[in-house]
Amino acid sequence: MSGRISPPCHSRVSYCAFSDEGAIRKAIEKDPELFYFSSAIPENYIPFCLDNGPIHMPHLVRFCHEFASRLHHKNLQTRKLVFYSYEDNHMINSVFLFTSYMVLVEGYSVRDAWAPFESIPGLPSLLFHDATNTRHQTFRLTIPDVLNGLVKAFDLAWYTLGGFDVDVYDALYEKETHDMCLVTPRFVAFATPKDQPDEYSFARRPKDHVDIFRALQVTDVVRLSEGWRYDEAVFPDNGFGYHVLEFEDCTCPSPKVVQEFLDVVDRAGSGVVAVHCLAGIGRTGTLIACHMIKNDGFTAAEAIGFLRVMRPGSVIAQQQHFLEKIEKATWRGNLPEWHVEAPKPLVANTVLTSGRSHSVLEDRCMENLTVSDSKGVECMPSANSMARDVEKGQAQRSRHSMFSLVEHDECAVG
Image (cartoon, rainbow, N blue to C red; front, side, top):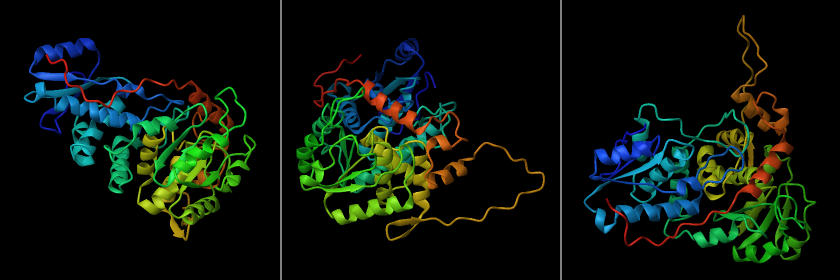
């Protein structure tokens, strides 16, 4: 794609990716009437493992302000602009942010915003990896999936770009005493409290969560992980409903757990439900996504994409395929049910292999087996090692300085 300007989906703005600075200089010299600009924001995604995005909501908001300041700058009103990036690991987030601006600010449909990228020969595969160290990906999360999730959330009036409070988000996310995100108006996703510090983080005592939860109008707390890390009495003693729905790390919930979780949410009425597992991304994101799929009309991919924008790393490994099962489920109240087809007879001369297919992985999610039991998944670590990788990744994620939301009065134009 180097040196190639994508077909514009906007009358004044195009996107281009370059292999190096030399290619950028040549492009600028070739057509000085175009104004080339870029952003460091796509580089701000900090992975847990092999995950590569999408960029989370505060940075998306900052990017839209930054992009608009260029597009509407008084010295650029008669110029055509090219937003560029390098052909590297950050390219997927550059394209995601570019198309997000077109959809959320300029009002383009997801199809129209994405169409120019479908028509570029040789464009690298732009897929988002989950927060695991598994190199072989069986779930394809695309930029349009994430965009459709954002559009659905905005249509539901969950958030707006102008109304999203970046300062509140930053005050809640990955702090010494707490790590939480208000992922939808109904749910807070948070990492497990712990009475004692460990090698990954400081102590995050439940008492330090109480006032924050009250400010967020939380009425109920749900624990999905083992409970020995903190004094569980703190939450009920402070007036919160407290519910234990344990299931093993990095696995999928049973239909009964899904039912019990959705029952808790229904009983909470208009109250906010705070949910945690170990890191507050895998099991937590999976059950929140179940509610989004059943009650709000999200597809599995849309729910996963939106949750990762709101809380990076949400939903991992086989949980992604489990949510596809949830999307296809029929419901008896809050209990998901699936029609199980009888196995087809083998055709003569069929060769059986030991590798497990995509559908078998989905079935094992339904059986609530551990990741280490899924022998057909290439390079899949054990549940315990995956959990350690994610928590270690959290500890190593440095805090980058944030971009100002103030639009620039001046910019260099050449």
